[in-house]
Length: 164
Image 1 (cartoon, rainbow, N blue to C red):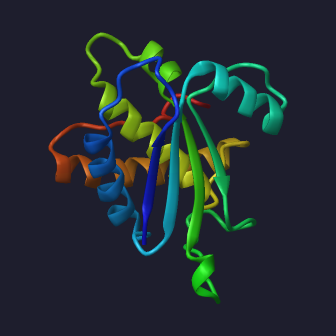
Image 2 (cartoon, helix red, strand yellow):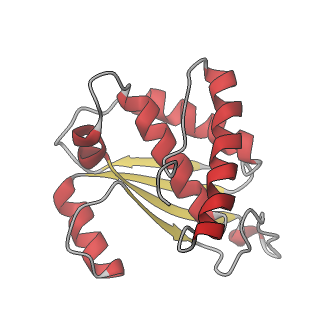
């Protein structure tokens, strides 16, 4: 199904083609290519507004995930009954925030990919509210990023590696 990638910001340059290619590879690794996915790239101000509205946190952040299918168990692939339900949901990437957090020796598109992986894991029911949940999510991110690294020729590390 489709991947919709929108760039709603002008704060940092963003080449959509490399990001789209990595998102497609990521969907393939996760086994969710048959599902629609929306990825929206936003600046700090828009991310702050979205974060304030949905999480009551008045600060920008790197990623917010809005799953189409609620109450999935961690790692569960949705089993839609109707064609219109082949949708994972939407991920908002705070590309300006991510750019500002990148270290000099880090590749911006690698960090965008890792952050999108984290968001996709949230769409598939993973959370990190407890250490046990974080362990599951970390292991899934690690597994996915190792396979993705093999495919794209880079070394990607999970976003949640130091959470607990």
